[in-house]
Amino acid sequence: MNKPSLVSALFIAAITTLGMAAPISAQEHSHMHMHKISGLKMPESAVQAQDGKIYVSEINGFGVDGDGQITVIENGKTRVFTSGLDDPKGLVIIGKYLYVADKTKILKIDMQGKVQVFADTNAFPELPLFLNDLEADIAGNLYVSDSGDLKGVGGAIYKINAQGKVSLVLNNKQEPRLLAPNGLLMDDTGDVLTVVDFVSGVLYSINMKTHAFTNLAEGFGGGDGLVHHSSGKMYVSDWKNGKVFSVNLAGEVAEIKAGYQSAADIALTRDEQYLMVPDMKAGELDFIPLH
Image 1 (cartoon, rainbow, N blue to C red):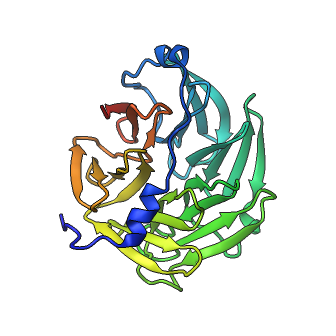
Image 2 (image 1 turned 90 degrees about the vertical axis):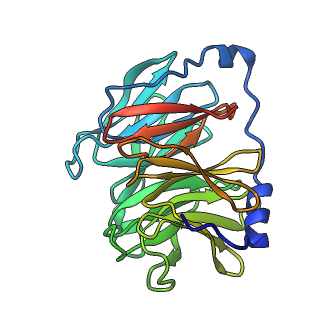
Image 3 (image 1 turned 60 degrees about the horizontal axis):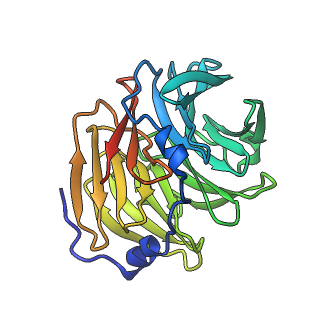
């Protein structure tokens, strides 16, 4: 693994301005059973709601339309939350809605599991190939990565406002180093977007004002999920090699767990005590204790 020699001030700014997770009640915490969940169908992404429920996107058959679903985990038990999706991947909760990147469109699902299309395929300036990770900023805008053909062609990052209007942030034509953007992380100012690349395994930051594209760290193989802990650390998953890494404020990379078949889009529990790791090929959701 290549250790970055110098970490830009941008990186430190990006991860120190990220805020604390919302406090979690003792009652809510006592209801969390953080044991590994198995029997999932190609789980890609996970997110925990304020009430402690965990939502997991399940792709099932890759490229098979209609067999994808979202499962909800409550008190350690799973049930189908909504079905009939295509290849659901990135998840984010804004207010009372769950947003899902599903193949070439973005869905908006209410807490009863009712699905509507938030940004359809034709809402994008170019035909999306592989919509992947979702992230939100403090203003309620969504950001979605299009990993293109997963080989370095067609990669892009889009911004979607609250009305569902899609605009381009950056694509492979403008920035050749952006091969297959996957995991996204927005800082609390809304000015710095961090992205990990699935093809190159490099972690980059994009300054939304100056458009500076900066290499922060590398060696993440098939870079997939990206989260920030209030301690200042970032966590990055490597899908291809089944590993999870931490990146500290000095930009030093450390492997924290290996042995997954395919570590997908990671997320923190709301109390930041655990890192949730969907192991796609194993059909499991693992929990890495962080304290």
